[in-house]
Image (cartoon, rainbow, N blue to C red; front, top):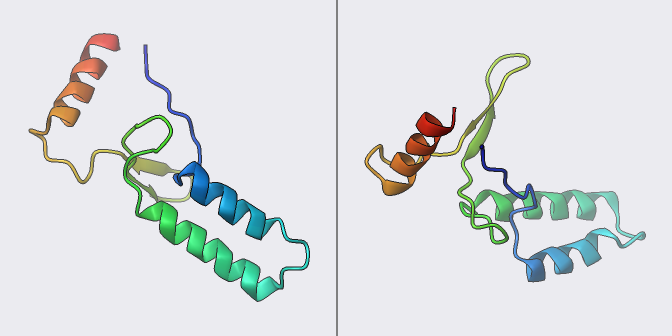
Length: 94
């Protein structure tokens, strides 16, 4: 059985609600909205563990025309317990 994660935005509930109120403002100029979008992306990129489900998050990058790779354990060493546990789960579950 493979684990599933929550797929939420990687921000705390407090930050998410504050930024959502700003984004939902209908009178927000285009450049301000664009800067706010960049601010949200910058904050979410710095988070490595989901604040909701406590799942590890890695980099997502595009490899070719139609291939996307999620390198979840890229920043971890091969001897890290998180990596060895994940490899053990894959070995026994598949």
